Image 1: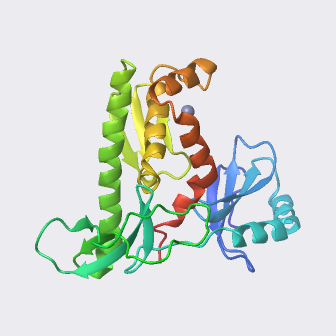
Image 2: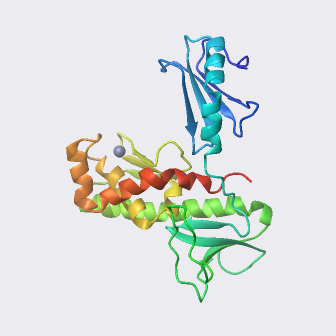
Image 3: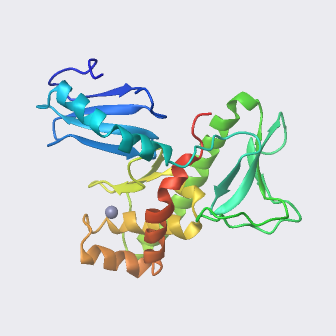
Length: 266
Ligand SMILES: [Zn+2]
């Protein structure tokens, strides 16, 4: 099963396993101490981590022994929601309907439109029933349908960058700090990070969450400009500039993974 993997070299190998709905990434790792199996909801795959000293036979046995656990965990993942015409997806915590409108000259290639009879509907993140009646605000994507998902994603990244830049600068000013640069990327392992040189990086997907969640994330990373740790002093700094921080933190822990469902390849 693991024949493709070099014996003592750190590397990643993507493989399909019969009977599993998702691929498994095998990580040959110099840092790993033992065999571990996990599910990466963001990448929507299983991850088998294999220390360099472990034989491939051992790794294969380990995977067989935990096959059912992995199969059940992968099956329990919420289904992916590709960007396509008619998809309902959240933007800043509100449900929107995607409309691929074909060629259109006016305005940018992506824009939002609130339907007249709609009141903004907050996404029910607990997964319950949607409120009935009324139509949703719309995200329109113009141009060739084939490229619409890509165009939408680029637009979402720009929206995220605008909000995250504004909120990061706001919190930084509030705490008399200054980020060197702000980047927004398609990162799946962390929502944000702060480098020793003062560069803040964020995942664009936080634009899908309610605004107080994005605000908390910005406050969190800005506070790292002064405290590169998660000490009491760090949390006091976050709370100083973001009194609702607990709410944002709890939200990300509870619902953060569900944001990775949106925009998976169809
Ligand atoms: Zn942190």
